[in-house]
Image 1 (cartoon, helix red, strand yellow):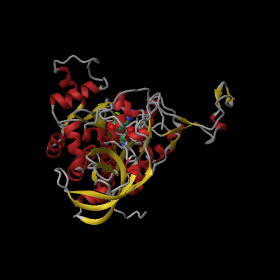
Image 2 (cartoon, protein in one colour):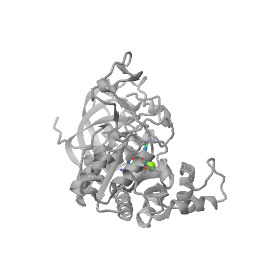
Image 3 (tube, helix red, strand yellow):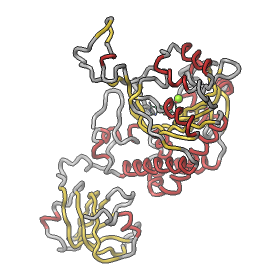
Image 4 (cartoon, helix red, strand yellow):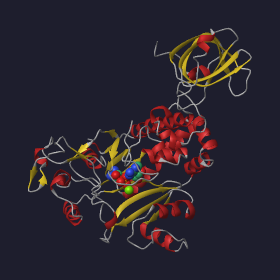
Length: 462
Ligand code: 4AD
Ligand code: MG
């Protein structure tokens, strides 16, 4: 079995030819007057390959085993297809069955199963149409991300997953420990993490930002792209406990440069998906969200709106809407507020800047008003916040003051503060949640359906 064999995508694009093999999993089978029609898919593209088994071409005992879900190889001739919707089909002469699938118990047998049900069979759902399309687009977004940054001279850096500091200062972290949970060592009534594996309490990182900042102050432009972890107890359609984030960081860059990069990057991803994922996108447009292609085409062309937090609050106060969470200057923007701004009021992506310092992380650069910080959130219709970022506080004393003011322990941040002592550069960066972006470009409504195996409160199966 040669890895250079033809994938179904290639077969569907090729001219008729004799003696080819096609590998895949059976999607459907239909029988009519001794002739069998089988659709197989290998994940290489949305379309299935139609295999026609002429009467008597394959022994009956083998035919019986060609059931939905079975893993097979067909050998035969690729011929012009008389049916509409495909150029070629395979006239089968032989079949090899690698793995049977019991048609009675195979869980993907039923058409139209709900996404909730499919989440319970995450190990198999990837063989279906929707998830095939989701994960091909996810792959394209990842590849386009590397291409975008590489073409612009950004260094890709692998920041650690285990961390001793809380980047967002929100305290929503998972502890990583090898201590005996039944009987942990104690000192002054508290668990003594000095005796733990890392000789201190360590966590799964919530963001690679603090580490990527070190690299930006040596390589100027860099980015990290990896898994991040949040132990917040939010069971919403937009939150995961483990998600993937792309975080660029640039030295010699202020908030405006940062916003420009974010807008260019989002448009680049959209353009890439429109150019390279037409079949998959057509499916989402038809079956999941009828506005998805139109939205992407519109966003590609339009300039993102830019407003300050203070202006956003005014728009919300004047909106005449009744929000569940009341609005006043100083409040955090909730999903309902973000969606009003981007969906109803402005009708395209909006970048909100200069938030009150109380509702943003300690590392954001303080404005001269001493009330707001150089933060920026990118909000998009249907999703709300898709990017969060800022210009960073590069002044040592101001940063130290902010850490203290936020009630954070100073010790874990000593090296982060050091960056401000030695050759501190003005710098900025942001984080894009890969899954939120994937929801945006596919129209999928629940974030659990755009990550291979989701981790949320109460669930880490598979
Ligand atoms: O706004 P956040 O928390 O920003 C940071 O982590 C910064 N350190 C990024 C930076 O400046 N380098 O998260 C950034 C983005 C959000 O806008 C959202 O898209 C996504 O990460 N995100 C989540 N996605 C899924 N589930 C969650 N629980 C998420 N929390 C944030
Ligand atoms: Mg945020």
